[in-house]
Length: 343
Image (cartoon, rainbow, N blue to C red; front, side, top):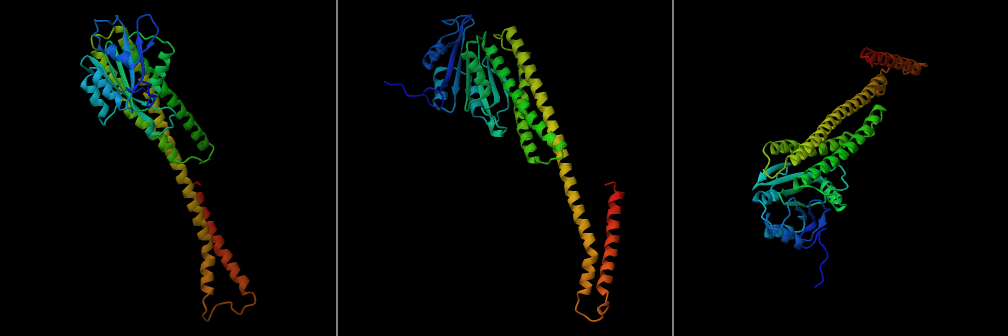
């Protein structure tokens, strides 16, 4: 029977990719059938010491979760995390396995809140299961590294590699955001109000959402490192500690950038208010200067008897002189007020 083409970037079981790691050897690609055979074995049966398998699934393919139920014995907490509403980053221990919920950004990240998605992992001594609904940068960077032949010592080292890839993706986001902020700041210093507060507000909202989702990760790793499962080696614990420190540095940079954006928003609001006040002042000056002529024109324009200078030969120029005098007095008074205010 002809094999059906892959669906949703995965095969019919929902498997995006699978790799077998053997000590001292390059990673080997495994199919869903080979992965099922591997998972069915007991740790002490046919698996070599230090060997493990990584299976990456696409949850957009509905067959993936069914395959996991049929061929693996994952903790119930893993399946519960797939369907819960709250997706803040966390790492916890369940049935002697690590259950991780990690937030990452999609490819072609465009500083939109919808570009943030979730990756679920189950990590034990011999099996790493990862699942996502959208293509994510960090896990794809890990997949490309493994595909290129990078050997990993243990499942925990694979998790630490993924966390470092996640930190690298965030570093690029912070760098791009810093470039945008630098450009906006340069325009503000040049007196060009080209950018609106909405541009900064949108950028700040994305960073706030990223930090809110990712901030629990260093604390979760710290709690895990206090009492790790017995099968995690000391060298793997050190790998996780270093990944946690790198991630904490990125979060601090993100927090500093948020504060900088907030200050720019306040500066932009002050410039807009100053511009509005200047416009209102100019409008007030024009109104004050036009007030004398409007009043006199209104008085002289009434069709009643007794209008002064109606029969005078030079009546027009007398009225013009009176209007000019009152306008000069009004202008002197208005501009004196501006000088007193230090403007």
